[in-house]
Length: 152
Image (cartoon, rainbow, N blue to C red):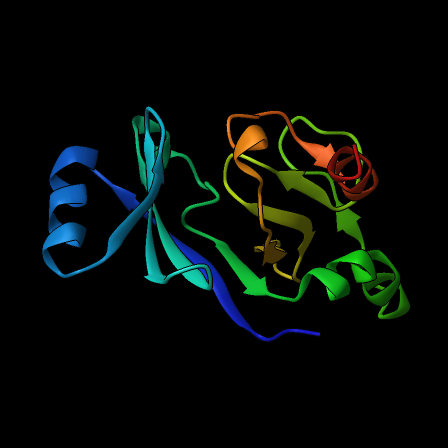
């Protein structure tokens, strides 16, 4: 099921300074929003997420205790079954209530989340091909909704 590392996260004090550093060492920008930036380690395979902000003073933040493992899209479709067969509880991401794997068209990936025994956030994640017409979409879609959209 797991093919490699998809992402790791790091907290940063100043996003602009950190972005310049990661560009300098040769990493290519994947995407950015107001307080995060992602750089490809291996394009479409693995990236590092840089997170800026004062919330790093709290005991937990995803950038401090989070790893995403790379899986294929076909394995993503079976991720819930696989995790449940291992008696691993799947958890919702952020404000979502569903535990189903979901697609982020604007980032070109799909994910499902779970925790290890120590409460570290783990994720199965895969890259997806996104047609230009959907690259602007920031809403999260279930795999079923995504596949239905692609057939239109």
